[in-house]
Length: 333
Image (cartoon, rainbow, N blue to C red; front, top):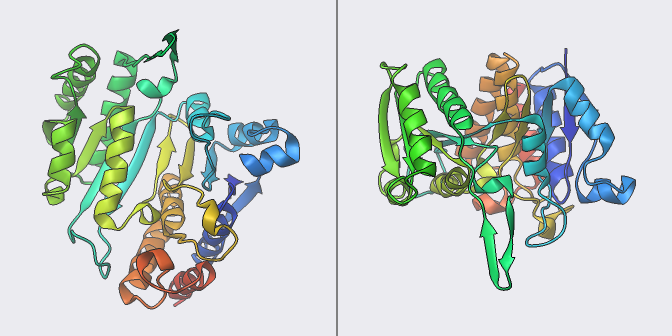
């Protein structure tokens, strides 16, 4: 049995995290959850946004599932997501983006995976005031991290029968930093001749994705571009409430939905748990329970295609509990 650290989060986090636990139980998955929270609720209870007990749990279990946690904008505590990624060196952020049959979206044939370097770039947080009215942020790109994320992207493509990897960059302007990233990805690509390889400048990539998303398979990007492009790609299939995510290191992984904590609907039984449920399916892939993972994906896609239990953000009227129950019922058939 695997023991997994469960971080419910705040806002809608506890509701969508509870949905995950119910769905995995309905799928017959044998997981022991060690529940320890972080974020605003944890601060109120313990005086720490990331309690020591939570860090000890993740360090011991090496697998965690995290609900959404509020991050203040422009003030307050540092992003807990970024803090955990840096502490545990979960260097690969993986976000599959796939169209849902039955949803009215601009595109019907999106099936791509975004692999984002997770530990450096502008997200290293190295910024300061140079003088009054002048702020400076330092962009860090290293050979080590770039080679590592390149290797992850190509190995992911190989392991999952993907045909092409696209490196996304701005090396035409940032010739040294993005140039180093691009050089590293090229070196990795040479080791995988069976996988097609191409390079696209990030602004062109955004345009291409909203015109011809079916052309793309696996995208590998530095941290900031990956963050932006992954949200753009989520919009192609219906929004952040539908897109799962994982932060993966060499021997540790944290799974989470990519959306926020939506405090305006917290506790109202309105949240869409799809992204969290699909993130949990990625967790099952990681622990080699692929059949259960695929069963959960099929259940989610089937419930959404049927259209009877869609949550409000998808144009329906179903509650979080009703949607979760529909997924569980499908798994029980």
